[in-house]
Length: 124
Length: 305
Image (cartoon, rainbow over all chains, first blue to last red; front, side, top):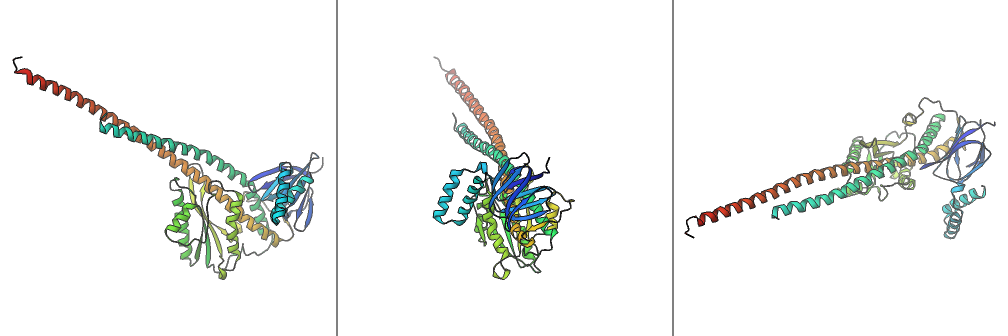
């Protein structure tokens, strides 16, 4: 069995996902970072973007994360985000509508949020 | 029915109606406490992880950050007071306000100027009535606070603390809220949010004896701390808002329970009085009849017919 790391994905008001994984890819402010079991302790600032978690049973979990932190120590990885959504929870039509509306209203942050959601769905 | 009896009956009816209302409010508050408690529990993982991260950066690096270093001579402080929008919660709001006033007095005795930031209509009304200055106020979400509400509250406070003191910024940030200890106990407490004393934070995080690993910071310790501290403040304010909401509902429940009990007692007393009044009426009627009959008998006693 391949080495595993324990992942906790928590949003401000709930725990979104937790489980064992073999690889976690997230986007920090200085670029994409992939964490595998046994990585050196790490604390980083996340950019808004999709986070990909490859679970130990071979599946993939994708979540849209809006800002937050990644911290890894003792084979435990926590992803902290103010808002985090699993790609399964995202309503694609709603995200698309929000994206169009944000575009037309030139609301940059709303546009980015919707874009992150759509990318998370696309990466599923 | 006699006049007195009618008055008692009317009062019993009105107290019964009141009792129904307070009973309903008690039950609503009880269900809301549970909901609020669940929200506190749901927000705990995020808060613990964040506290861990703050401790890790604070102890694992020699970074100096304005939010963690104490000013040599603090001259201005901000006090954030959390009250509720609605009353009928016993001493809930007055306890919180009293705690805030004590804290303000203490800070002023230390020679600091105090800016008051208030959440909740009750606190705002209290300060407005006394014509005290409120730096900023928020209302309308105290029953069910969301994380976005905590963000709106935290925004101006973080801005104020980052500003220079000479330009209207503050050196310290205190928060006064009602801690939810248990269903029966809620205490108004004050605590200093900023500048952060890392020892206190470390003590608070559950794993006290754990040795934190040497972290690799991405992009750098300063940047991480820069991003982390505002989130930490927001999460603390969020937690305080949730606890305050839970406490308010618990206080309402208790206040409404005693109101219901009192109404029950009142109804008992009134029905005793009403019974006594009815009995007195009957007795009087009987004695009137008996008196009338004997008067008639007396009047006809001497007659020849």
